Image (cartoon, rainbow, N blue to C red; front, side):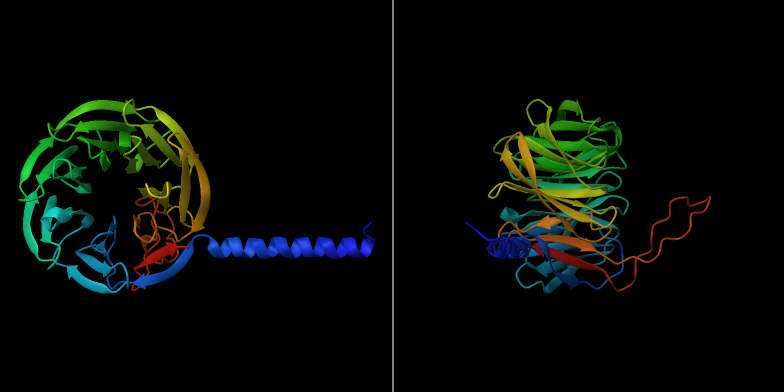
Length: 348
């Protein structure tokens, strides 16, 4: 029989063990590992990790800064651009592609030398950009023109367009089986496109519950489309029927997500509030659980995943006090502090 003294010792030991277990769990969890400074005070958009090529492409206003994924060192820049948004990589041709609002172009560059090889005028304000290996085409979502442009990844020439899409085009994802999915942010819809024939095959309504569908990736093995909704949800959509099969709450200001089929993890970056990286695990194609929310920084809204290391990269800058609202600008943004642009690295 335990005495009060021995019982007290047992309780204290259990408490110490619980605290130690909690500390070890926190040490093993995701956290900000480091912050890589990048010269340049312009705005930023979508960041792209080329896992195979070990390169990280960071658009920053008039340039794309290229980092080594292993060392974090800057290895080159693609300069002389205007309002760059995203980068797509077609490794089989040795070509990369940049979407830029100048007022609307796709710039092709050499992956080895980073020299510009050509420029194709597409619709106004191209934003999201992906490479589809099935058709060997690059697809850009041209927001200002409400269309999608397909570009031959070998030649850099325009292969065709899909016009009159009926809303603000946003992110795209390819199932690599002949289809491209496209979010229509302002109308809360999802298009399923024929990537070869360049036509709309299906249009599905996501809102509600998925208001302002933004970021997107896919589980190609199970034909599930993952969509970050600015209404504060992660929505999982059946790519065959358009049905939302699962949802999970996320923060506000989502603008990127990626899925890792090796681990079944979905990473979602939200830049609203204090900023967070939400990590979910796929238990089955229609069931998802939260692993953890990692605090990042305000405006850390886009991200890229290195599929080799599992590390996540988020571009960000520090911000100053928010100005007072005025009749001309009732919702002013907090100013970016010069010299603070950088990339957060999150891992275990």
